[in-house]
Length: 632
Image (cartoon, rainbow, N blue to C red; front, side, top):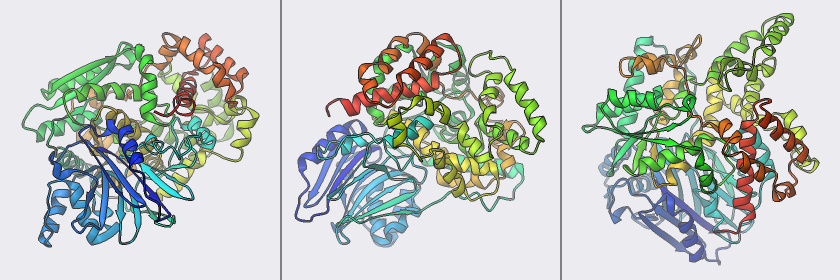
């Protein structure tokens, strides 16, 4: 894992400033604490911060040049199949100076160009300067594990692992993109290719961007997850294939010259990864878990069950509500407004793991591959309701609205009441509405006329609807999984873990986003994933003799954080002071009347407003840190 950055002037007579590249490296130092380097020649400059994982010697120093010096690269990530690619290249006479994957990528690119991206298995983002073609190439891995931001204006292009790397150049403006903020208030994150900063963009997953020396920009997709043709296998065959593919994905991710371990939540995904690691490792696996004082959110007992089963070297940490003191630093690391509150737990989990290891595996993407979220089941159920006569649906609606609001936000009645208002909407749009934090009616009441006019005609639901269309399958469940894999997986889940881990110089590896494993999961019939009300059916069956049945059969808990309790308790004063501050009101985005109403109803226990309030809180903290404050 590393931090990468670079700059290209479109006027060949101009030279990139070494001071800018050094500043980029300084602001990205947390991503690569072990080494740094700069390549600067005329209008092109590349910067690199290194976290040494494979080949810890200076032979892996970056930016790195090809043997003939025509290619220069700054690379972030890991190519897990580089040993096989290296042997192939050596058979063709290529001689290597190091034992790292970056040099293999350079040699492969020199032979095949961008076509080599389809042959890479791993997580990566890189910037490559081709001096012969006078072209800067930016590329990102298939699932979007590693981030990459781009800024282009009439005279230059800049890129970096994080927006703050681009902002190290004083000539780049630091202004909010209000349309992106509109999307953030819908999803709790800014979906690619948008960025919260005006003029910035995210390089989409599974794409590469070519920028010519004169400023022409071309964006190309090199991979798409396919849900057809469907694999024709029995359940027993599917279980065997699943275990074989997961074992191989884990095995590849054990390659490291530094200590490694695993995040262990107590759910089936991370438990399956730890089981495979234990099978493949000669020493006890180091495992790391986070817990809370609030019992409904605490998964430590389940994590201990797996740790005991596999005799892991287990470590735990309890997150307490005094995290308020750490929020500004967390906001700084996340660069863009980010409302997934589990980022806090992931941040502290990464800090805990980094005390013991440099690499940690996790179970991310199990839900998206095998339909693990409750909303997938509800989506299927409400689709059946679409065929019911209107009088019956109206009667069901009356019954749902009469359900008692008891048992907390996670209780079944409250979850049904949350999803029901959208049940009569067209299936794909219904799902998109379920994924929203601020609904259109609430936004209409909350937005000022000025903010409303800025976002007029922009429907954030189009992000998910377009992802549905690109899934290219008539099966609704698989199309829904494909939409999530294209949106919330890279922009929420993977971004959350990348930022939290890299804030502490920790490399996080995710076996379940191995593209061959994902392609296998996508090819399975949808009823292998969701069988009645049983989610992750085939994964649970495949792991039933490796994971205790108590974990296999327990309801999904998720990596939640007790923000509802915190915002009514220890964080209440901070919440009010932040959202109602003079500076916040002067932004002119939200009607004070509407904010007061939401806060009053939240304090009185009327409705469940904590997701919206947390979203607004993180937005205002982002404004204060990135837009109001002077640059670091």
